[in-house]
Amino acid sequence: MAAKLDPKRLTAFLASPPEDCRVVLLIGDDAGLVNERAGQLVRAVAGDDPIRIVEPGREAAKDPGSLAGEAASVPLTGGRVAIRLREARDAWSEPMRQALEGPGPGLVIVEGTGLTGKSKVRTLVAAHARGQVIECYAERGRDLTASIARILGELGAQAEPSAIDWLAERAGEDRLAMRRSLEILALHAEPGERITGEQAMELLGDGSMLDLDEALLAATLGEVSVADRAIAKAFAEGANPVQVLRAALRHVQRLHRAALDVASGSSPADAIGALRPPVFWKAKSATERALQRWSPARLEALGAALLRAERQTKTTGLPDEVIARQVVLAMARSAAR
Image (cartoon, rainbow, N blue to C red):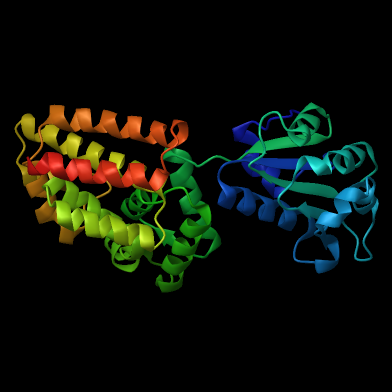
């Protein structure tokens, strides 16, 4: 068995993990995606049968045979046991080794968010023929839009491409928050009808993301005080710094695309109208005004500055929130000049 799962095999593996697999380690920085895929594996192995689902406590790490014993057990109702281990640490390496080498048919599902590439657990599972490592990093592009469509389908709803594109644009780094948003959409969806982009905007265009949109639009309009209040409110309501910087980069890239169209002869209104996902109708007028303040060259330079700022959140000692807030206010001051 390959230690690192080929992305093309992921869907089939999550739906039906092989009988000869004993331990699956889910790693990566997207805790929500790790949690989601762990849940998929549990359902694939044990269904909704509580007798076949085991979640060992931390004290079980002191017993080297704890996981192997659970994996070897045969439930009264038949089938396989799913042993779900949350927040794995290197203290679990010996119980995992014994589970990998012991009899089945159970599957140990390990949530390894935060484990480094040099961790004992990761090295152990990756090197073993009965182990499987699944990487769970924030999805982008087609992978993200496919996941959004899949999750909506699981919730009994469908959406038009414009709605899915808009949702992907706002997904950020929090998988659990994204799933909650999709659950809200599915709850309000009419049976047999597809959710439109406008409906998605009306239902989900609030909270921290609305404040963030307001902050970024105000920044590109040069409205320093409005941007400052909006970004402070966005942080207070749960926005995180990396989410802010990436949303700012997407906002600037969209303006840059429209600015290039204007430079080629399009009107600002037509350039804004051609953007996908579409600009929320309430923000179209302000977006056109912002477009008139920025040249393609300035927007390209601003995009490069935002990429540098995101790298700074990982390499400097400054608080991430300070960096993100300074970037947004710097955009506003630049536009005001």
